[in-house]
Length: 308
Image (tube, rainbow, N blue to C red):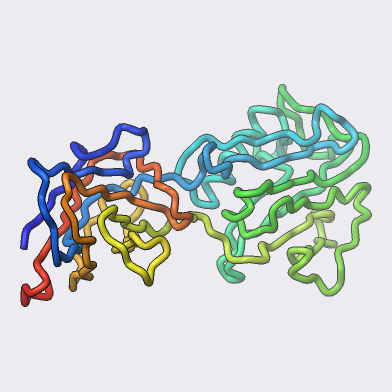
């Protein structure tokens, strides 16, 4: 039995930090050998919102009659976000672009919509608020205010393909603009309408939607370990030997030692290297931002008695 050590010195320089290659000093003949993951140490640093995965854009309309204020793209910088983080960025975008108004007495900012976690329903909730056509009593406007729409209406929010998965909505989902506060949601609300409801008590005109599938805020909650030198006929792809599910907070170190090694038979042959690739649940190489990692693989002979 012997151990192979993979660390950042073994990383392929492709900008992803998820493919590691162990080069043997000389070619070796491996026959009737088995391989297993024996320990893992790396930092939880792969993003859920990225430009590459197209999970970074929400489409927003403030005034459906004004082309310059319609179908605006809220582009979220690449990062690892929870729902409240995304909502915070939405508020930042609204402040930067004048899509908010201020309650004079309290100084509170009023935003046109919000995305929040509804833990009771295991869903992501979208609330859109009625935008008045003139400044209501008790409110003031910021210096960069974008201007009221000509008719009272709710903002239109759309979740394009890919980011919709994070929130649990159908790709292309679009909220209603409730023009003139005239929208009547279906009764009873259904999953196909994302459980649309309307508030008839002040503040009136609020439309609420719930995701109709389970949100996948972190689509890559599991890391699959793929080895180039095995052929598992019962796995797809056939190179998967292990799955890691981080149980730590973002930015923390993930350390795991399997209680029992899951041995996988290696393909008999002569080798000069072994390649290890860390895949997301979409079976694509992850983009891991922190290259600091140490992964140990153990190789044993067929007839070695130890299970570990």
